[in-house]
Length: 240
Image (cartoon, rainbow, N blue to C red; front, top):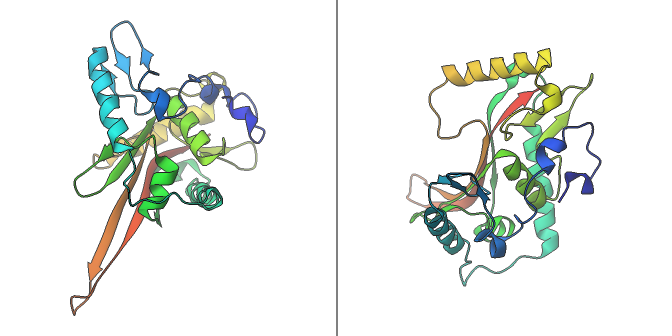
């Protein structure tokens, strides 16, 4: 699926995110759709690498189990899901600031029911802990394409500013060809990498988007307890 099927994408940037395998569409094909190289097998979503096909097959089998919905999770109306996706895109765009010094790790958090999370990300949940924490991992240009399809917006991770500047979510293995020798793009990458080097080691790294769902709870002075589910989106941004 080409990203140009949605709103128009300017310049050549879409070439970096459109050249992915068309077979990465849903869990029914996930068990057979994967990238291979001379010596390894790669999960198309999280980009985890295995030396043998059996390792990848076991990984995909586990992922498939994580994406089987509970019997008590009712399917929500599609109009509800579409509105929630629009909210997520809006909040991500709020985290794409103007100015290369403002780049680095970003976090979007929002109250979200388990039903809502499962309806939107079913098929791409890669971890589910005993504490009922879900985690999705997206890496590389294939990860950007998958999120474009999930959120129904090819520009979910890209925001434009004056003078042809733009801030984007870092998910590409390499910058687009036409930007590799761009002085501003080079300065931006160096500045962002310097920021990352001086920060504490994080569980969330440039080049990936981690989406989690978990329950937050609290008690007051009289032991009254309340809780709510939250979605957390971790990602890194740069400006060019």
